[in-house]
Image 1 (cartoon, rainbow, N blue to C red):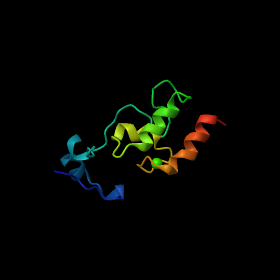
Image 2 (image 1 turned 30 degrees about the vertical axis):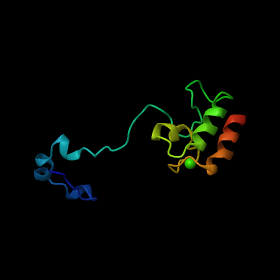
Image 3 (image 1 turned 90 degrees about the vertical axis):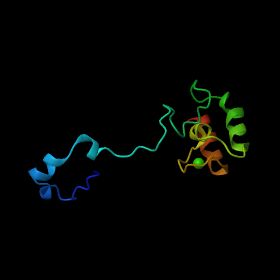
Length: 96
Ligand SMILES: [Ca+2]
């Protein structure tokens, strides 16, 4: 059973609450959690630096990069690694 709770919490009666289990309240998880911070620009795991430049460019030029390749280079968090990420990568690399 997948419960749909009313937005107004006052409408959740004790009978409704008692019929729920933890599984009813669980959200489906479709994301892959890799521990990677997306949009960091850090491709090699050593912190953002000049060693990430060739990795960023290589990932940018891939025809169909894997999600774990897209993640660090997706600087604008739109789910894509493309030319729209270049300026933010360079800005992050140069620092504040
Ligand atoms: Ca992007």
